[in-house]
Length: 272
Image (cartoon, rainbow, N blue to C red; front, side, top):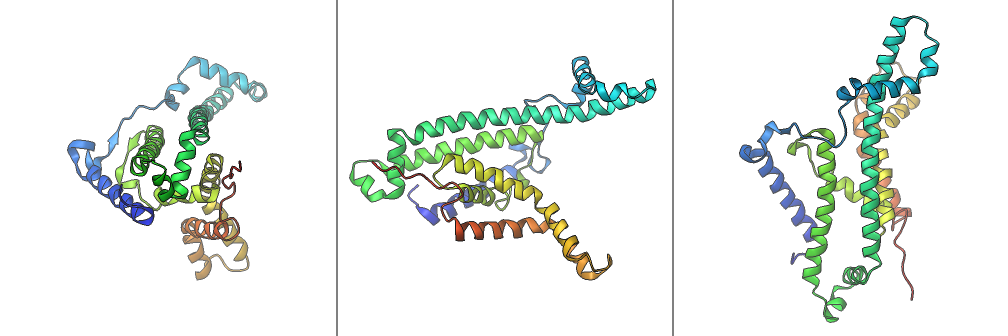
């Protein structure tokens, strides 16, 4: 923790790579490349819901208007089964969304209270001028370590929610480009030093990350509408669509840094 700024970032990235390498290759600890499977999740499984009477009755009630129009009993039962399958997927996603919102709201309330508390003002003072804070008798190294641990704990909660949703833990899939860099971009885009900005940046960047491929495919088809489907340029661009997300992330970050260097929701400066 004696490192600062860029050196601290480089050190933490290297430490994370060491941890990932250990987890990935130590079979006795995490099954190594065989991954950790069978993790229980806080939401019910779709298969179990599809066999539960109360859920089937609920889906039948919601889709009663459509089922009434089907006169044949066999076709009506087939349609109901399809509605149950689709409804189970939606119900599980709603459960995860509710859990996610509860955790985010709790963390937001706690971080907002900490931000405007004397401790939060001290942390902002250390961030803005370590020498001045140290001269005022604040233990800068201790506070750096404390905030480092608190931030890691919050990220740990997010990681626990992610692996329980996936149902398995694959250490090799956690690459810096997708997680460390992407989370950093979320904070920069949303607004560093603003809790609401960090949440907004997370939604914006993740939406662009998910929708980059469909948007890229649409733009490719639009710009190459006059070319034949077998044209080498069109084929090459369509094959490169999955990589458009990196291009969009780079362009988006450049635009934010150019026109909104403090993020979409910049930090509010208190003037007293």
